[in-house]
Amino acid sequence: MVLGKGIKERPGHFSRVLVTCLCLLGVSAGAEAVDVALAGLMPGKAMLSVDGGSPRIFSVGKTGDGGIKLISVGSNSAVVEVGGQRRNLRVGQQVVSVGGGDQASVVLSADGNGHFMTTGMVNGTTVRFLVDTGATLVSMGRSDARRAGVDASQGTPAMIQTADGPVRAYRVNLNKVTVGGLTLTNVEGLVHDKDLPVVLLGMSFLNRMEMQRDGERMVLRRRY
Image (cartoon, rainbow, N blue to C red):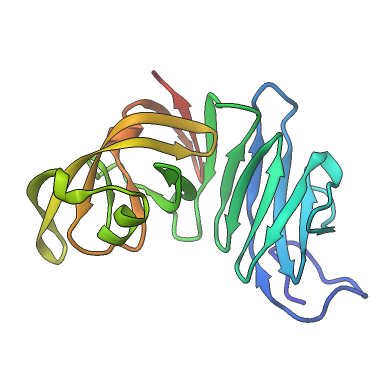
């Protein structure tokens, strides 16, 4: 089995490789912080390391160390529950922060290309975010907007310049944007008249946060 960086194969482990990824899960909402690393996925099971310990196999539906419960696994993702909150961990995702109730901060880690990416939600629909301080608004493609129930036709038409030239877009209002345990309402957004690979987490969200970057680590704290 091929495992995450720094994790060695041990005799008796499953030999079939399905997924290898590394995800950190920070829990800080009034309870003791717990770090969880998702090292690999198998049918009905996941290898999780809690607080830097050796990876252990968790079975779907079972609760293990640190009160971590494995809800489900897929071909390239797993859903875990910590402190009453569920998060979908995907391949290549670096950080998901959860806790009991709305949190005051979220910690993100850069990927191998130095980008800060995470899974979040727009109007309750799961999306992949890329932190982009160069984007004025939270920007998404038409397919993500459709999934999130955003009717671009009701927005204000605009033309924006991209690397591929001018593109038609629509300024809209997003009812709710969630990153980790942080949720903001009434966030200005932009829907491109084409698909985008990710949703750009732009300054209409980030301006309402305090951002602190330390190397490959970024902390977002609620400002108001």
